Length: 341
Image (tube, rainbow, N blue to C red):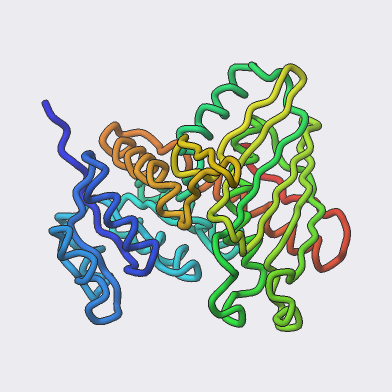
């Protein structure tokens, strides 16, 4: 018997919501996009209708629709936890974009709501579904590089920096950008727990906004309980394109993932050797986005927990919170203990 596709309602019609809607509708046969909801007039319909879905201005209509099995939350971060709780109470399985909440308490509340309702909760850490990162993870798990000693993960956003630096919330570089790197490092160091961090950050892209609290460049050193040391690095402005990379060095070798190029094609001409690079996360990470939604749908179809959920969101955010404290004190800061990822 063919398993029916999971019927999905998406909440949030911004940049990432538009991308997710397209990925679900066109690249995930295990799912059907039924509706997109956004309170802004016309925003949801503009995305949904070309994809054969319904546009809604009421989130409640999606949550109470018996023809929808699961929701994808792509609204702004401050709304994440409350929307997870509401969706779980409505009996819907939930995919929530990272970070899952604005505090450890919010993430715990979302976890508890999903557990109480008996629904799946998956959090959008897409690097786990990128082919090269998956291969690196499997190499580490298989022991091919020996014991893990050093790790590195970086995120560099494309372009010249935020369009409106004044609108960037405080600590965004840790809670929104490096949160991906914190999760990737946890995942690439299986079974280990982050113990403490030392964070440094500054406004190097837009120093004129430093007094307003902008941090656009950061480096974090993380120590793990298995002795491994990791470095996470971020910048809001990479002139050459979107750059996401990972590296794990061990006692018997090293594995790397990510190079920012669109393909393996290389051009050799009078100017030297060059590669075309991606200018958007939705371009570079298309396969990863499709992979995470495929995992979400299959976990529901198969009646199992998704491979990345609330515990992983909590572990990554615990590192982010420690980074904020480290910045305030200038000292190495313990990471709140929790489940290993």
